[in-house]
Length: 435
Image (cartoon, rainbow, N blue to C red):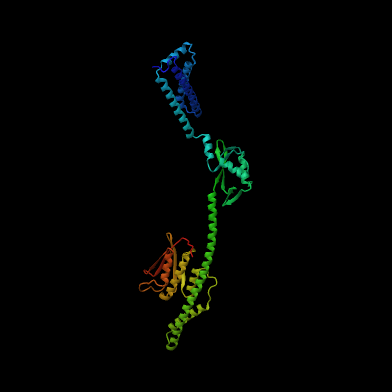
């Protein structure tokens, strides 16, 4: 059965519908070819051009059929051919052409968003949060995004027309009221009326046979805020450091007074013993060596009591060294005394305890303090020229306090007996502020 039956109402309706569809398919093919030519896609044109020709021929054939001008021999043949075509053929043809055009149009749509074009670059730049401006040496704007246009309006109150003029105006400080320039480190940043902070960067970039100037404006509001907070914290820490230094000096003075008082008390006790020795010597007599030792001890005690506290003891370590010297123990320091706390305080405490033990128990007159580095820690070794302890060493009083102080600050204390008696301290090198 043919699709078009000559002379019937059914023949007219179906023929008209196919004629309209063929016209739509033809114009659709024209649109597809136009887009492919614009996109310069040669491979797809090999498929689209035959489709365009095919739909054009189909449209002309149906036009001849519907116009009724089948008076020429060619028109009569075409009309007879259409009348003899089976029903399914024109239907399948229209469906195939419609599907093909739809596929090509979809491919054209995807290609538009998948390739980089001048327009896609412009759209990407407009969506960029930082301002970008590229201009020729004489100021002709070559590329500018929306962020830079808005930045220019807020800084100067005018539209961006000349890139070089805008740059010079901004860098020279000719900006709108409400905007201000703030120096951060070695560079200037710009604060807009809405309190956003922008950093400007200007550089020359090669372009073809010349150079183009590129100006970028980056928002650093959050970084600027954190920098200001850090600066305020640093000022607070500096003030705290000054207060801590003052407290440390007061502690040193109090320690000096306490140590001198304790030393004088000990000397007073020693003088009491010496007076008893003198009384015994007077009553019972003695050798010349005993007499010389008694006179030397009395002379040392009296000399110490006649001297005042040094007026300018600089810190605890110097105070302890000076106090030891006054009591007859010379302190020899090898290496560099730490300048930060609590290491310096721990070292001063160790010198005090060791020179006291040198006097009381070892009966020596020299204390050796060796300070050195051991990887990431500070190593201090304290020895003396006195007698080596005979039995086990019990950590009581000063030694126990020294160990507690050392370990509380993250250090370690070791007491060695062989080959000679020594107190070894291992302290952290990191500076610590505490009260």
